[in-house]
Length: 467
Image 1 (cartoon, rainbow, N blue to C red):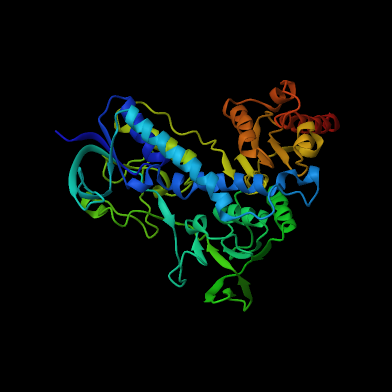
Image 2: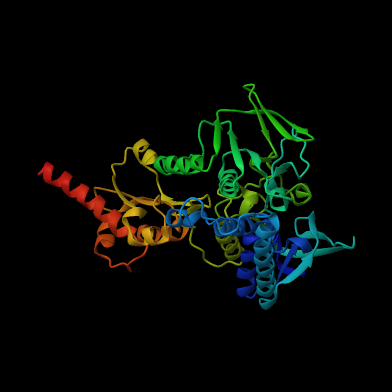
């Protein structure tokens, strides 16, 4: 008789939801994680602290109010790291308490330590004291997450040359900073530090940034960041980063040299699988530490599942939660529908970006006809009240059946607003539903009605000319 029906390695969003889902189905469940990492990377160095930091930056700098009160408006003149981290530490400790409480309420055993496979059904849990205990389970879920990838050629010291984990432990706000990598994490931190007044240079070897997003949205973001004195170096590769007594010097392969107080690398992430002894369970990971799974999140060994960032794309807290739940249901023999392919993406730059469905470029490439409906925040009463004159919502509508093919939002509340479009798309609704619906006034949600009217007026014009 094994000790547990399910053992979950990692207590981040994926592991936590897998454990609770199995416990709700009456199974005996245990979770293994380091005592200082309950809640996983998401709560300690990833999603939660970075989004809390963003809120603190927006509040203390008064950036989002400057359209109303003038460019010199600032809530606090000298913003220190202590100002920023106070809010972050408060939120993180509260979130850890919530997770501990949820696991406890659902009678999930929590082992404090690190895990390594002994055989496919047995895991050795090494506690902080050095004591090791063997735990057996019918099913195992690997939800160990990732860490920032670090190029071997760079000497990280965690203070002047950092990855996205170290950046939260900065001693002071740098006057200047080089951010290597224009992915989601790189651009989120570029926005935050630029808002704090740091002179930011973004170096990216590709020709552009955030290429999964709508082109018009990315152009708007670039404009906003350049307005905050961000410099972009696209198509450039870092040859070396030199540390000097008076700061850092980033040398590019083109010969350019960029002086700065600090350098932050955002060069992708590496799966935390090195210490799991996967071979003893009959498993392996790729060069980025990721584990391959099937549509039910099963690994090559059928009773072992893997969920979250450790399996790769999309590597979002929101999708990891659903993967964890789906894996637990499948392991427990519960019917579980496939995850809906309409997954919203939220990027917490300043301003934020969110979208669901396809972009204009993707639809054009797939030869799918579409019409565009746009609403700009400056035309909405709520946009004026909030002082956001740059935000916009874009609907991509099928002229054939009038369904929504994509929704793209840029501006305040974009990550909240997107779910209206997601719900309409998920239920097969049409643009006409949005035209006829009554929205609270004044709200940002009203942007859906304005954009829907814009799209239907264009469709009507096509029909009139074609008749």
